[in-house]
Length: 150
Image (tube, rainbow, N blue to C red; front, side, top):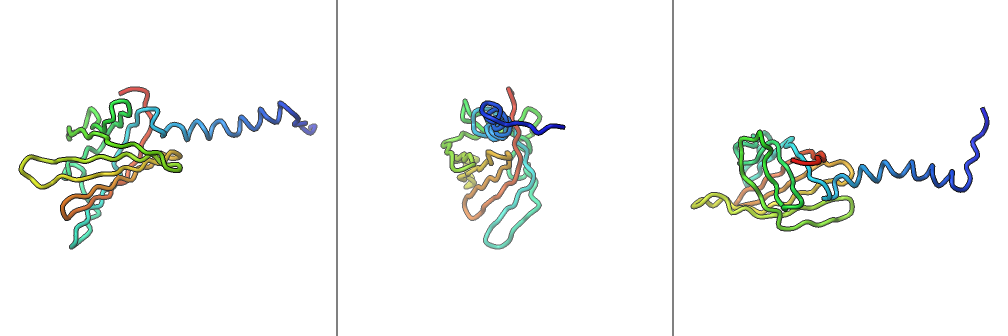
């Protein structure tokens, strides 16, 4: 076997091949495409205890959700029992993270409104959502994948 001679345009082409896949993967979680997400684990925290085995249904959170960046909505997947839709009030890009924020008024005549912030890794699609209300906080861990349409 001979030694490969990497000069000029061949070297540039090789560098492009090495960088291009990383760029396209990182770009999938930048808010340019809708995302499908799943809830992996929920922690509920109040001043007395931490519950690390929370069922999403009990806190009115769908196990599977869709993030629609065009409509600025987080909605349940079609097969979800929970039908609550959340409006995305703010979208911010920080470092390699996409931050979504919103507020929920909750049920009428119940003090269950809260504010939430979702961080999505632009590299991996891993999600951490934190939400806080009156004397309670939630930390939700999940995973997103890109979808073409929903």
